[in-house]
Image (cartoon, rainbow, N blue to C red):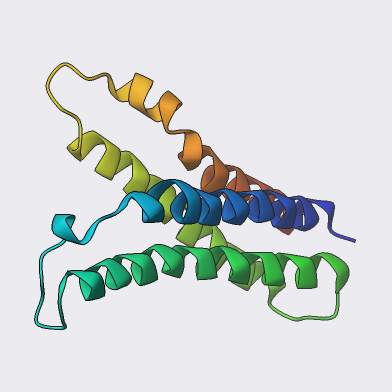
Length: 139
């Protein structure tokens, strides 16, 4: 059994749970149609739906990572496991970098970048997953 891959699946399960809960409980119920413009695809409610779909693309990425990591953790017969793992590492490090960049671009004058990153700790999850996956490739 590849313990680091199993740990990655556990971290990703926590991340996907937090991700879905955050949107469905904290964000979605508070959104109102008046805050969204109509688009060529439809009215404000359609724009809200597009926002929800885009949010859950990330959910699908996490679920895919969970499935891969669980499969790889308990199965040594798959060729090219490390290649797929390296692709996942690059993907999740890229997500982490995007979080850092978007966080920096959204700062208002006088706001602390470090304080913002500590308050919005979600970046630690894809970074932790990347480290665990890398550790799993070393076995």
